[in-house]
Length: 268
Image (cartoon, rainbow, N blue to C red):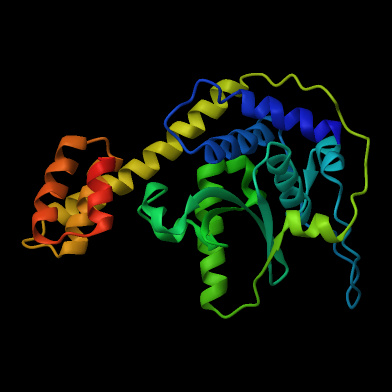
């Protein structure tokens, strides 16, 4: 729908001058913060009378934009549609009467530390790292929604709940698209650029704090294994401390030559 496409493009344009971040991640942050600026509200499913069940109809993405509210199904589908509109692979996670959205960063699993040293923040799906997002927390911001969704997903898996991942691209190949032409076509959102930049700074700060904390732990250890030294070199590089990173890798190469360590040295 034009309403979805136009809004997604407007959100992405707010990241034009933002560098040094995974492109899909910064675009996903911008889209999420755009929904916050619009005032999208989470509302629970309507409840029926005792002993009866209400039929839960999932709204069209443009319809949710028009009404500015929706339950977890509606907001997840809206967010996934907006991500897809700018070429980001998206999927729906379904488990125990709840759904989340997740999107593909395009980062291969072997490079997982280039996203975050906290591997619980991502989901490995089809060989790449995907970020889960709790769309009922639009009012709380992207970072909060990311961390909460990651915790919810891994808890559901650890509890043995039945978790299904529905790739939008595969779903579209099986089920024909249905159009909904309602909704606003043009958007004028005050302070969008500032809101996006603020949240990106929060995300960057959160990721950097985790790096600094882990680096400190390794530096303070009396002895490090080869794996830990390699990890320390990666952490220094992630923090922009390239001289320290090179020093670690150069010493490590003399003790344990491997293609991974040599590759890390070359990248540093």
